[in-house]
Length: 154
Image (tube, rainbow, N blue to C red; front, top):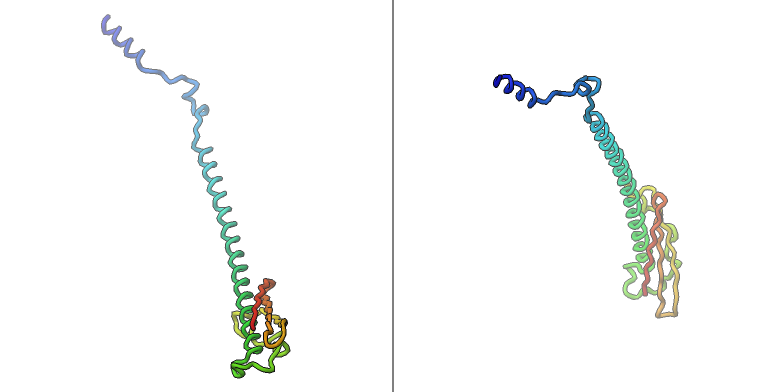
């Protein structure tokens, strides 16, 4: 009788699985929904990274075109200064004025790095001799990007 009671309490201690949970049709896991969620998040990251790379590439292209336009505008301004004040005429520069500046110089785009670029120059004079101030404006254009450089010279 003591043994029966021991057996009985031992059986009572072991929990039984309810029959409605032990059926394979009733088991539910979180593995599949978690996997789908992780895949969705990772694919969103991949798509966003693609957009970032594309934006970065277009920004770099515009930055390069801006630098090219700035360089050709500076080159045009330097060319205009050398036409207005030729080194051979130093130091007097008598007889030179804005009419000596070429409005659309050729050859600046001969370099392969400046292909597709153009420059337009203008010169204005203000004041009276011998205190004439020349203002040279150089407009550089490369693939639709425009940069302007203005230089004052006495």
